[in-house]
Length: 234
Image (cartoon, rainbow, N blue to C red; front, side, top):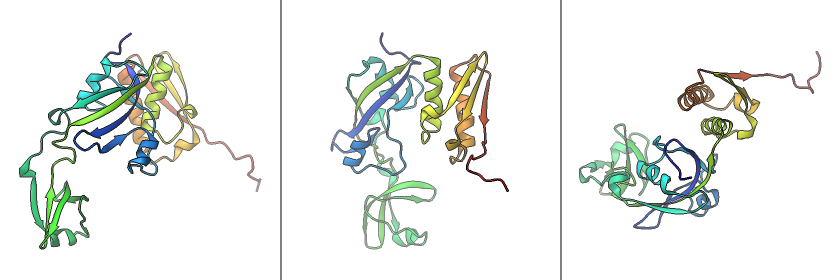
């Protein structure tokens, strides 16, 4: 059966700039390392997408319904459907001293915050810096090489993936949960207790589950603290 809006899929992709072949994003660890995009602590694995929810670029999202599971596809996205065309009015010179006064030592290609907006340093010289406030990929045609690795079919698979999306640093299999009538009860693994932003993540998990499973009205999180068996009595 063809993929459709609302389907839960896991996708793997490599995003490139068509004009230069430069890789700017990927879900594959080996590619990230090869292209010097690798970030310590980043989780590289197939990405959960609910088709039609806008979790990826709209043009890429729309193309997923034409793909076959396990078969690599190439999607070309023009600037107007990606990050827009470059606006020359968003490029301007600023005095170097204004950046150094903020503790910034600019270098070519560096991303800096200036007056509350992010910009890329394009040129430097004569005490001035040329800042480009356009998004880095503005004006570029993007090519995504995408493989739909799997379609999630059961409620268990979908809820497990929604939890993992919010807490990717903890293995998906370590979260145990029970679906009963209108309630989902999630047993939190100890590794998740102290994950940064875990309360926000839990709120997001509850909202996601209730959004995609309208019959679920309650999401409970259970945290169990067990005494370490090696502890000695005092």
